[in-house]
Length: 320
Ligand SMILES: Nc1nc2c(c(=O)[nH]1)N[C@H]1C(S)=C(S)[C@@H](COP(=O)(O)O)O[C@H]1N2
Ligand SMILES: [Mo]
Image (cartoon, rainbow, N blue to C red):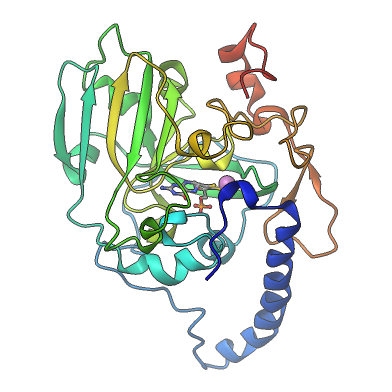
């Protein structure tokens, strides 16, 4: 099998998805069979030990909405980037189901007064679950609209009393090559790591996610706990988090280590700063017709009113 380095991924590979879309059209045509009572395995939701796909109770609806239709559940859960389960968009949905997400522990440490390791349930307990519909934009120039379920990262961090030295937050994904076959190859430096500046982490839009479409997060989307930062490129939204460390120095990030010229620490969605190998001016909406024109990408992915202030006076060409 040919394993590509992330820096080798060309925008032309988007045709991969086009092939998929044609297949999907075919499946839609076949959908009438399902109505007639014939079950298709593609319509059945995988059941996993962690409860992925189970309905979440008491989810509060919020005003976070988007002026675009929601993406299809199926597109969101079968077209994934999760290199721990392969570099192919379809692999995570096929192979991540075996990952054990219960019990799950998360360590919160570094520059906090109350460090510790917690069971995810205990970590979540004080936080009412909210549904927020956000735009999501991958650096590969595709986008989707997803109803995420979770709570503010800032509310979580405050409980552990960050010290005055807490300037950044570093996030780490599970490292377990037995469960994550992609980690047996060095396509990225493992475990996957990401980071935010503390004010970005405390921003009310920044979300810890445990579900989507009212259900427990499917493994391929980062169960049982992932980050969502809607004004940044998708790779900042790290999946299957086991550690949250507050730091004084800017943390390293997996993509920056792998291709520093292409992926900076900030990675804000910005149509005026192209990726060195392709444009970021437009995006292909996931699930849209093969012939549909691309949509213009918005500054900060449409969240400029909320977050532009965080970057006042910064040269976003330099801090990409
Ligand atoms: N641990 C981990 N987190 C990750 C990734 C990854 O490979 N490993 N891929 C990132 C990228 S590039 C994107 S676009 C999003 C995709 O999220 P989705 O599959 O839920 O759409 O996850 C991000 N988080
Ligand atoms: Mo991405």
